Image (cartoon, rainbow over all chains, first blue to last red; front, side, top):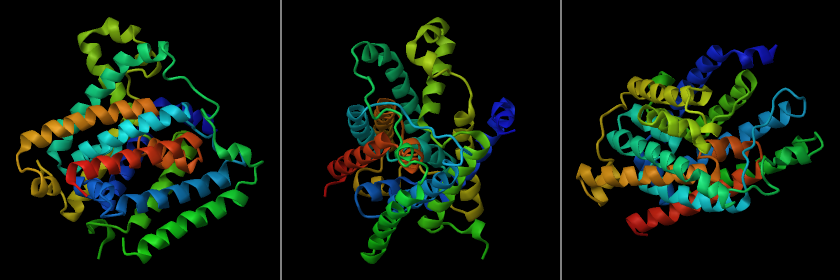
Length: 186
Length: 170
C-alpha cells in the first residue's frame, strides 16, 4: 500500500510542501532563521542550534530504532568518503559562517524577511551549485569524488536488528551533553 | 497564551518535533529532510534557459536532474512555514543587514550582500563536495547513524567556528 503512495508523484510533491511548511515553521520558532542565532552558535555564545540538533537526532534515532528493524522504513544514507566528508565539510563550514545561514535555514530566513539571505545567499548558493556542476566531470575524472568503505554505511546495519541496545545508551550520552549545556547556562 | 503566537519555543521542543517530522517523512514519503540539493536543481533549471544542450549533457545534471521533486517542494514549503510562524508571532520584519553584523562589522548593505553571496557560493560547493548540509547530514544523516554524516557535521562546525572567530575575533 505504501509503495502506491510513494509512487504517486503529485501527492508526494504535496507531502514535500507540507513537510517543508512544518519544518520552516519549527526552524522559525527555534530562532534558527536568524543570522544572529546561527553566528551566536558558531561564536559559541548561543547554543540554540546545537540543542535543536541534539534533540532532533535523538528523536530521529529512536524512531529509526523502532521502525527500521521491523522493515517499516528504509534508510537513506549518502554516498561519499571520509576524506570528502572532511574536505567538503570544512568548505561548508567556511560558507556557513560567512553566509550566516545553512541551506535549510536560508529558505527560512527568506520567509522571515532577511533580504541579505534572499539577494545574497540564495543567489550565491545557486551560483555555487552551478559552479560545482561545471567542475563535476573534472573532479570525477580525477577520482577526487571517489567513494570509500564508509559510503552509504549506517551503524544500524551492524546491530543485528537489536537497535535499542546501542541507541539508548548513545541517546543518554547526547542527553548528558544537553544537561551539561543547561548546567553551564549555555 | 497561544503557543502559535509565541516568538520562540524551547529548542528541545523544536528539535524533538523536527525529529518526529523526519520519521513522518520516512513513513509517508520514503524521504528524509535535506535541502541543499534543491538549490543544485534550481541552478540546472536556470541554466537550461540559456543553454539547454549543455545541461542535458552535463554529468552532474544527469545525476541531479533539474526538476521539481519532493525536496524542492520542501524548500519552497520552508519559506512559507517560516513566514507563517513569523507573521503569527509578529516576528516578521524586513531585515537588510542582520543586527550582529550591523553592530560589529558595518551597517552598509553592499558589504553584507557581497559577503553573503560569497558565503552562498562556498556553502554550495561544500554541500555538494560532502554530499549534504546541516539538515541532510546534520539531522537526517546523523539520526540514521550514517558514519559519513557524523564526520561531515563535525567538519561543518569546526570550519564554521574557526571562520566565525576569524570574522568577529575571539
